[in-house]
Amino acid sequence: MSEHTEQTVPPEPADSGDERPEARLDRAVRAAEQALIEFEIAVETFRVEVENFSRLHHQKLGPMYSRLDELDALIAEAKAARSGDPEDLRRARDARSLVMPMPGVDELFHDWMGSDGISDDASAMLTDRTVRPPERVRPTEEVRRLYRELVRKAHPDLAQDEAERVRRDAFIARVNAAYGRGEEAVLRELAEEWAAGPAPEAARPSESEELYARLEWLARRKELLAALARELEEGAIGSMLRMAPEDPDRLLDEIAEQLLADVSQREAELAGLTAEQ
Image (cartoon, rainbow, N blue to C red):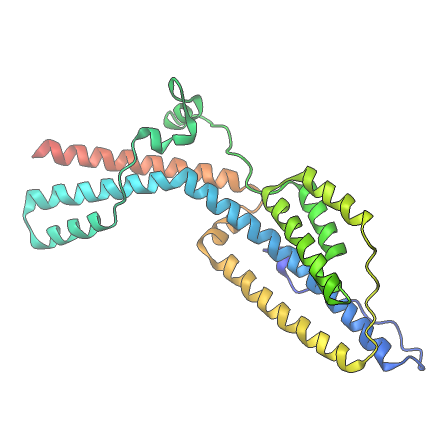
C-alpha cells in the first residue's frame, strides 16, 4: 500500500531569532496534524478496498471453494471405500469435516443465472471465453478525490472544542459511509453542506504544555494507524490486492478460471474412482 508510506513533515522556516518557542511548536503540531490526516485517509481508503474486495471475493468464489471441498471429500471417501485402509478412512473423515453443503450449479453461478438458465457470462467462463469483468470493487477516482477533500476540511482532530468535535465526528461518519458505498452524488451533497456550515476556527493553542500533549497524542494515533495498515496489508485479502492493485477485478477472473479448472479436474478424478468400483 504505497499510500501508507511515512508522511514527510515540511521543513520549518528559518528562525527569525525573536520567534516565540510556542510559535515553532504550534507549526510542528499543525504539520503533524496534516500528516496524520493524510495517513488516515490512505489507511481508510485501503480498508474500504479490502472490505469491498473481500465481499466480492466471497460472493464470486466462495461457492467454488465449497464445491472443491465437497469433491475432495468424495474423492477421499471413494479411495477409503476401495482400500479399507485406516489411514485412508481417517483422511476421508478429515476431508468430510471441512465440507459445507455442496452448492449446485445455480449457486455456483448464482449472480450469473437468468430466467432461461446460465447467462452468457457463465457460459463464457465454462467455455474459456472472455467474460465481462465483475462490478468494480474500488471507489472511482472522483469519489476518492471528494472523500480526501472532505476529510481534510472536516477532520475531528481540527476541532477546537468538544461541541465542534462532536459535530465533525458525526459529519465524518456520514462521509465514511458514503465513501464505502462509492456514492459520488452523496459526497457532493456533503461537500456543499460542509461549505454552508459554520467555518472552523484555526487551531492555535496558547500553552506549550497543551501543544506537547497534542504532539504526543498524534504520535500515538499514528502508531495505531500504522499497526492497522500492516494488519490490512498482511491479511489474505490485502495480500491479494497487492498482487493487482490497479485491476483487482482481473485477479478475481483469473482465480475463478483456475478454480473452475480445479473443479473439472476433481470431477474427472471422482468419475474415474466411481467407475472402478
